[in-house]
Length: 139
Image 1 (spheres, rainbow, N blue to C red):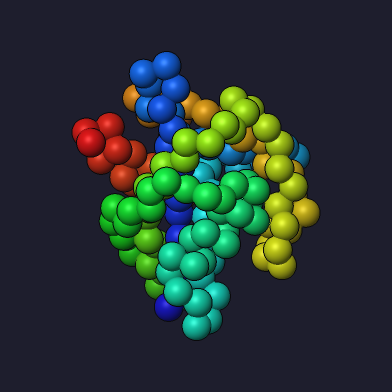
Image 2: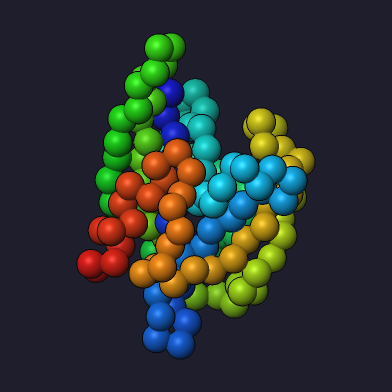
């Protein structure tokens, strides 16, 4: 069984709750996504979450980290449990920025383009990563 973590990173700006999304600079067909990735063997779930967020966005130092749900995916080869988290950040993060993915994973070296979206106007996310977006808008 694989384990994945996904991060809904939120901020408040001008009275609007915004979520941080990214797209691949060179692979537009990948669509909009949230930071996340695979939990390594013997790694704690929250540790994997923070590592993946940092590798994919360069962000750390969150004010709040809260697990909001999990879902299961199954294909012919694997069963995957995805853990969804809400993270809140207060420090100043640019409205848009690029980040070169670090670490040793399959995305290492790719460049992600980040932008903040009004939580009520989120586009469809790749691979059903928007599973818990509705939950965020009712909080």
